[in-house]
Structure formats: structure tokens, C-alpha cells
Image: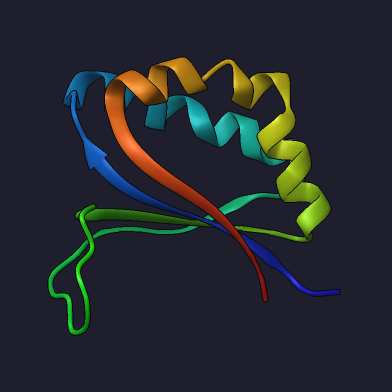
Length: 95
């Protein structure tokens, strides 16, 4: 079975709201086997342009787990806060 990843490219608009959102996401991951791989800030763009300076990568045991997490009421309830706190491109990958 292959892993699946959620990758978020982020531009924070409101630091306080973003901190609140970030504090609430981990509790939504456990049920789906999700684990934070890393958070970081872009230091260089070697090719092309990336409009979002921050990134987050979360690993899940399967695409089904990613879909379950994203569709869950626990995560869906955080989306309005996320939208107020940051601009984000949220992508899913299978590896």
C-alpha cells in the first residue's frame, strides 16, 4: 500500500487566526492516521514562481484516508477559519 500526502502552499493573512487554525488541525488527523511531515518557509525558487511562501506536508496511509480526513466534519468545520486566516492551495498526492 502506498502513502498519500496533503501538501498545502500557504500565504498567511492573519497570524492570530492562522495560529488558531494550526492548533486545531492535529486533532483532526489522528482518526485518519495523518501525521505532520514538515512545515516550512520557502528560501529559494530555483525554477518558476511560487506565490505562497509557506508549505505544509501531511502523510496519510492511503488516498482513502486523505479523502476521509478532508471530508470529515471535524476538518470541514475548520475551513471557514482557514479561509479567513490564509490563502492556500491544498493538494493531494499518492506516492
